[in-house]
Image 1 (spheres, rainbow, N blue to C red):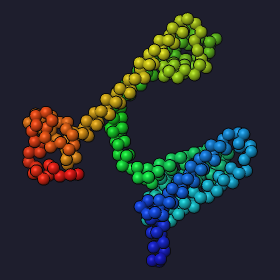
Image 2: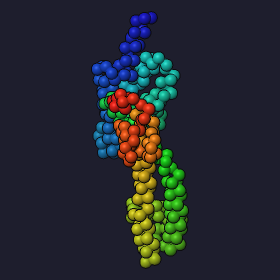
Image 3: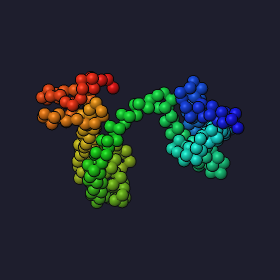
Image 4: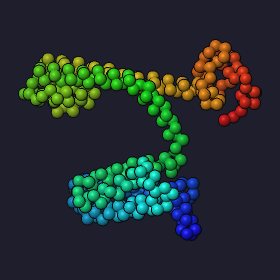
Length: 288
């Protein structure tokens, strides 16, 4: 029993950890297999290549499915809490990496669900020790939360605009110029307002072209609005971060009440007062 427990612990260290050399090698090899399986699926979607190497891709897919199935079962075996792993984010992704390969036997269209394996590449952040960089994503989350209401109002206004423009173009151009319905006109308004302009539908009458010009000009102006909102919230989030004190909380100057200071600041940049009048000199100058 002890030998089995020891074996499970060793396998757990290799599969779930990257602190050991064996663990890093395992994860790096797994990433190579994941990328290789994605390349095979993408190449198999090209008809000319599929016709020439259909049998090879078939066997490769079963090979990859077998590897991922063995890995998944091994993770369940060595995990201290198998159910917790099975229902975790990576546990579900690992399961989804196996199921499409099995489902493709019964449903041919399930083959391209294998692309869900690309999510497993997120492990590269852990393998290459890039996790500290993910903490900077907190700025993005704070900015998104802060700008949620403004952006919701903005997109509501845009939705109203494209409905109005789509209806107008349906009336002005009509079915003979490709605007066969109001939803079709709304589609044209969306691709025109976003400056994409696929060209599959275009106004032919002078009035329609004038309206289209107005929509395109408005698109250049409108597209900058959410960027400005998000940038302002991002700057606000960073100002709040820089306003944090030595203990990680926000400190105001006791003299002039200025709240934004550099993290390492000991004195107010406005009036020069001590930001920590009750702290000792050693506490103020102590490194992180």
